Image (cartoon, rainbow, N blue to C red):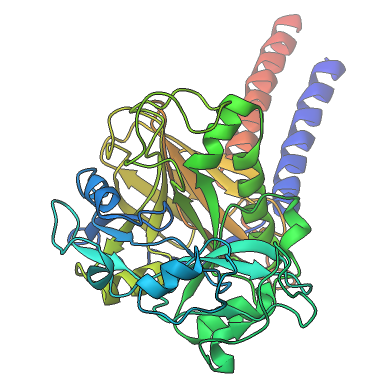
Length: 446
């Protein structure tokens, strides 16, 4: 009899410990920044876009217009005063920077695109162009380093290089043949970000291949990071590399250590809707198919189909990064609303059958359509969601910036999270059942 009663007492004590533990381990948060806070979900315009896939010819632009894109960058390399050849500059009406000396890749800014060979718009689904190029960052010795995309930048920026670089193959020249002002010349990655941003660009760190902290020295840091590149995904699949995992690790690292308002971007790079099917350009890649080309893109939520609305939405983070590994394109999950309340973030989709995984500080912190904010790990800087339809398509939300709620005033009991209350209720219910059973056995014994 005493053993039965002791068991009941132990269960009651366990329930008290569950409640106490909930007060200690469950940390509550509020959302201090919601990138979708200004989106009117019932009327928003969805614009599939491409920032970085080297659509530098009319035929490539046409291919994107036939693949459902609303806005694209008519882009190629730029930024280190490296024309393809001196003759190419002359044919473009620019002064010959250094007669007889071939320069590396890159060219002068091509804006507006229609004046540089791009088709007039609208064309099929394509409604407007995006200014920008793939800028080449610089090391202090003048050599190339990180690449960045300069969304919204119509001016040309020139790498300064170093005084002793001369005509080294990997270095840029230190002269200034175009007579550009200091505001358009840079010598380091950080200077490139700062000066391009001052000129109105929103900078993205392209294909950040390296350990997460490798990019910590870039300050100010770009506003966005590429987290998916189809070009690099093809290397992963055919050549045994792990580029995409590294890109995502960099994103989670900078979200935690620099700012929870650094956006994630998906692109095609050199494997896009215009890439020929069949044998790949890279020997170890898989065969190019409808499924594995044109897999990285964005869906930006607009108030109107124009560049001003686009820049505002991208700056706010009102867009999704898309990975689409399926032959049927533009069929990724449709997010119909995102609701942020005091106690949760809730995502609704048109199909409502996708797997939704929540990531915070690089770790899985939840699953399902909603993320409760009252029982999360300590010290979270952000939460983001990955929406997977199970057929090769993943939609990445932008991060929701989190702020830890202050602890309750002294003497005021903390309200345990609902899961803890349910656990305690189960324990107490079991204790009552055992208690009744013990009393019946005692009555029988008497």
